[in-house]
Image 1 (tube, rainbow, N blue to C red):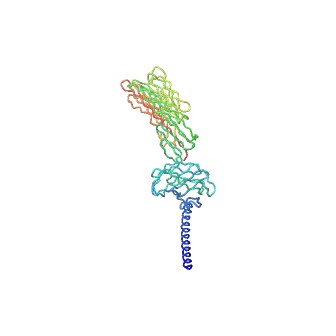
Image 2: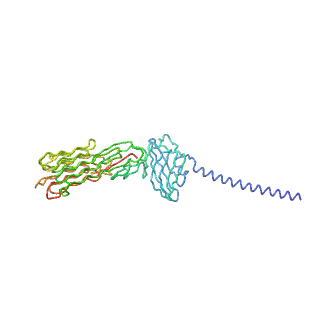
Image 3: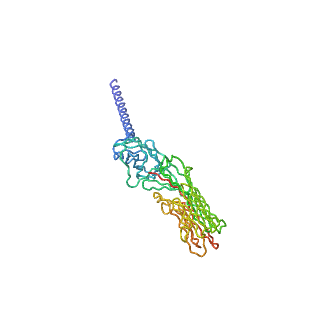
Length: 439
């Protein structure tokens, strides 16, 4: 009896030990899996090429990375998920860098960074997080932890890369090392971080009056390089061109252009309208309007706003020639300066760095309108518009005066004076606001 009891107890002990062994093995397997998961998202050391094989977090991998001593960086991000996603933000050492980048499954993008802490030596540790929006609209964060990034004397991306979004608003273009925001109409410029920006503000050009009028004055022009813009929203106002006057409308007097502004920090004054046959004096504006034709009195050009433009040209009472409107770069030509012609509009100012986004000719803004003609039976010519979108003055009995070019702030070309035709003036060109900064 005791013999069989001892055998049963021995069998029970063996079974118990087997069970314990199985539990221990399973526990070790689970612990190994947890350790592996933790290791995949923990701090990683190694070269940039090694990093690409080690880091994979929440559907993203960091393929390569480099930072420079001049506080610039470049990260190559790959989508290793099966769904498309949108990168919205990269956070490096708690500094946010904003993007709006579509990243399809399996694709990679090179993203440039601004204002990362200076990378000195061979490598430097940075904390890196990437925020993105999934295909289902959920905002997610891939936290790569603290990783070593290779240092370089400078960062010059090769091929296609995506610039960091430092600001929004207007039409955005990239020219060399600069981002340009162009406002052809009113809107809002939003700086996502502090910037040193180059700001050009051009008001609407003055419309010219009807019946033997001078050229409209160009819109006022303000250029402020490397202005410190704090993060925030800035209201942008783009002034309209002034309306034309005319004999056929019963309202001979043209209208001055509208003001343009960058918030309340910089306000450019609209160009002045021009004088005409029965009211020869030009009017004040960013640049002044040109004097109109008048046989009995001298016509005076309108005054320009100091620091924004110039005066319109004068007319000496010789009846035939109206004067040019003032431009940002020069006064309007007097009505008697040209032989058998109206006075030319004052020249505008050239900004070659903005030639790709505006101006007429490209890069030129705020030219004055050319003066018109009043005479009977002679084939006199109207004055030329100033470089920067100024309209041409009308030839005698031709009605061929032209408007200021849109988004240049050019003044309208002066009208001819003859009772049997409409003798209409010309509209001024609308203004423009341009903001640029280094990528």
